[in-house]
Amino acid sequence: MFKHAPEAAVETAFKSHVAASTGPETEAEIQPQFPEIGKELGALGQAPGEKQSDRLRQIITQIGWPTISKVGKEASEAAFQIALHADHDPELQANCEIFLLGRRAYAPEDINLAHIATIQEVVRKNADLLAELKLKSRLQAHDEAKKEKEALAPPPSSPFTDIIEPLSPLFPGSEQTE
Image (cartoon, rainbow, N blue to C red; front, top):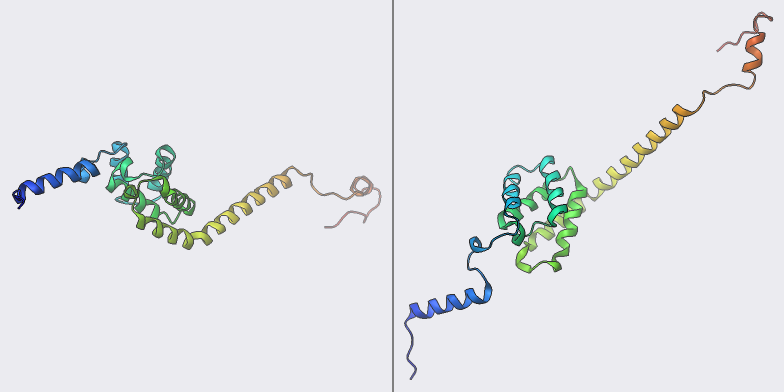
């Protein structure tokens, strides 16, 4: 019959085969493309807020969605948490949903697929808020334009004002009363 190799040798050979075919064995061996941004996101994710949301928007503009390969697993999770808690900025959340829905451009292990469903739920919840903000913005712009137009318009006057006012001293009791 066949001779069997010792268990330890088989296990070592198997591990080296798996490592060679799948890449680094541990997450620590994966080097992100943007480690500085990853460290920054990790710190920002500790207390999500408006400042953090603004910085996440800048990072997305700079490198796209912070995937695991770009910034590391913890930083990618922090980016998601910042977006998730950005209820004050539903537009950012909608943009993050678009980036996450573009997951076909990412390797399946490069993003957490559960984040997609979660951010979609949040975006739907905040859709009414986003519509309200857009409407409010339009109304404010309309009001400002109306005020500017009123400020530039001459004051309303009667066509007879120019005639009546000079005659007032000649005819007592013809003064205008308002």
